[in-house]
Length: 179
Image 1 (cartoon, rainbow, N blue to C red):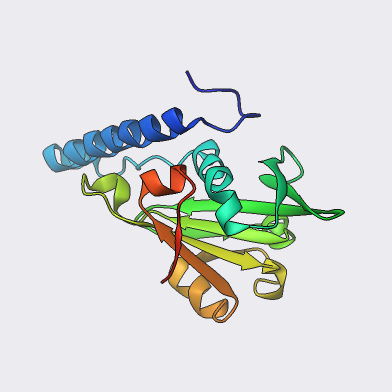
Image 2 (cartoon, rainbow, N blue to C red):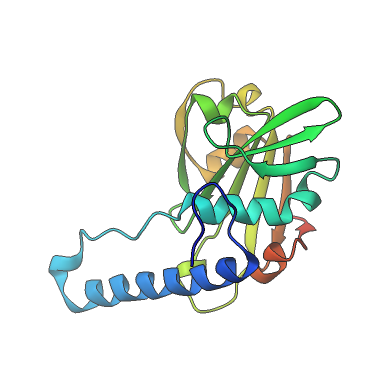
């Protein structure tokens, strides 16, 4: 059973939810293939509790000096302490379309984390999830904007830290640096 939005998903829930999401994506794809009237049906948005929980599980690898990593509620998606300072993290996730809207709260955060799933939910193949971490996003994105991942990578060139891993590895907190 999924926990309330105040709690991160467990490893078991994080393992089960992508299976269910793939089923939903498969069903919509089948509808679209069978009936042209299904063309305007949209694939679902990835639940924020899913992406935020993934970041919490791999957070010690992304933020090695972080203490007390937790969901942030209305303040931020995730909060943690470094010494006496509380840091705010905003989390975004995209699938194949790889477009995201960054609002004021996102660009005012201390860190922005973008999980790029690519074809993960439309394919049964186990692909790597890419994780992009940008410190001080307001320095790169001064105003709220809708942006593609490719444009984001160009604008944040030299400031992005990139990670990747299989979903299982991310859930277990094992990610690797890389492009």
